[in-house]
Image (tube, rainbow, N blue to C red; front, side):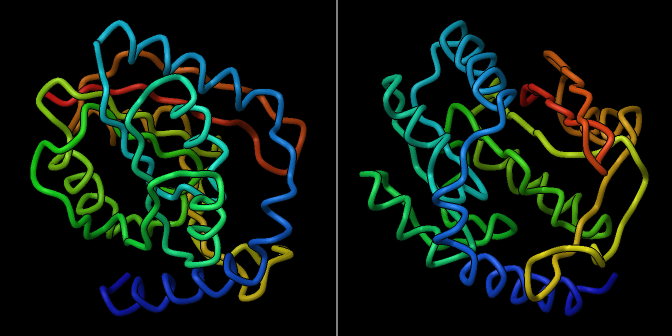
Length: 208
């Protein structure tokens, strides 16, 4: 998938999430999401992490939790409407593309990305992972979580959002292999889901 295609996909994602921001803001957390956040918080405390960047921050539920736990949180998202919801929660939030993060090298002790990298085409994913790695301090922790279990890339034709969103899903073995090309693996949790998606894949990684 070419660069221009990814740029067009990002524009569609922004439109889809802007249009649905209010509804997303009213959504309840799935029961496994707080468990995933708690797992990462434990690792952050062990590592003495302070500065945390959340990419694809959505309406700020995770960012608010991390801030309440005492971390210095910065949130970024493509959607201005979702960023406004983050700001309403008292978070430092900015409209920004995680493929082009406007932060100096090594700015953060940790990066959290839950169900955002699944919108990145496979051809563009190495560049995004390189950007995440760049803003992490040496030894910094990266949480990469997303739906998967099946091998699929393309527009989700039954998506309720308009424009319909692009997704890239991986098998558990494949996502771990991709992560291992740039990061050391600290912990992996696979959560079975009772839905059209097979599983949630939660990877805690460390910058080499």
